[in-house]
Image (cartoon, rainbow, N blue to C red; front, side, top):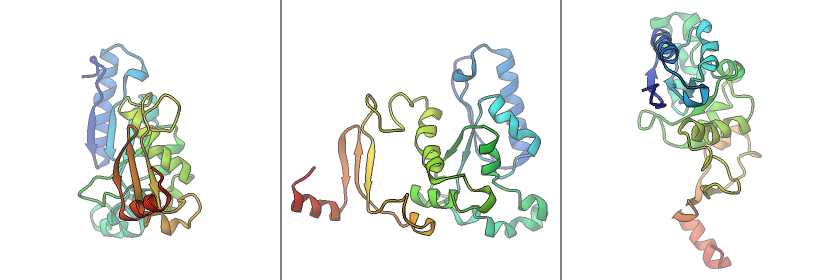
Length: 215
């Protein structure tokens, strides 16, 4: 797979799964040609990562994919895992900020239907994790958009609003960059545009359209 420039998507919950996956990726890299841009393997979930393995993500261009919209992923609920993992390891789960600061590419995804689908709830939780929060909402948005496009080798076409890219966008009911963090997850979509085509419009948007005769 690595030789064909295809990316692996490996589900890794525990630290042993992470280490063995990184080991396998490194073996594949040693045995095949192609620079980092050809290697966009992804490890997803990452509930536990041994600190010694964190630098290996950037070194091998392995993308760290997190899902934080569910209640179980919130730090206040890690106490549920103390009996299984011990207090120290339970409190070290989902070290997203540590991974980000290591220079690894971080993405956010939903894990639906295990966790809620709402991307806005994921964004809220990504910046509400105390010392393990992503540094800003801008970085959380990038993790969910441009970084996700990079993961899928689609960054030339989507992931950001730029000349020459597809017109993929949403119109929402509030400015998520200005509201309190606790309100981000309550954001509602009024309009969805995919490739320049309107694919969804809320009742409220249709009413506004009738009033203003726009779009």
